[in-house]
Length: 174
Image (cartoon, rainbow, N blue to C red; front, side):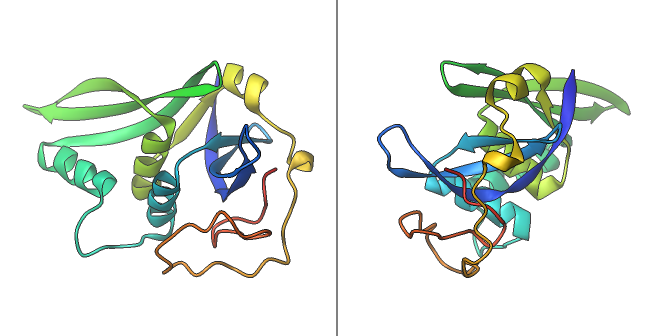
């Protein structure tokens, strides 16, 4: 069974070597699902969430513009597998030809799919199996309510500051 998820925010988690790594955190089935991403992916997801526009399109903006121009639409995003610590996702899309919908499903990295979903406000679904393995109770997330909000116009995602939080989150994942 799939559960609809929402982006709870973008925070910082500890990687395998103890280094700080950006993570997008989804909320589904009452649990939090942290997914480690690169700083560029975190910036793109954050940009989609806050509606940040650039003079020139970023990759996810370009892809959406191309899909739309070719008569397609992204319907939903699904994170449906987790193997060896790697999340796997799919993007459901459709295109109308002669008034008839044609359905497509594309393999996608969850970070890319979430970045697209954030721009479109389309549903994100997560399978029970993924939540069972990687979901965490909200009690396991260290809240960082005292951290000053991050400047959304900053060029970088500063993951090296202790206690830093992105403007879109209210937690610090450890």
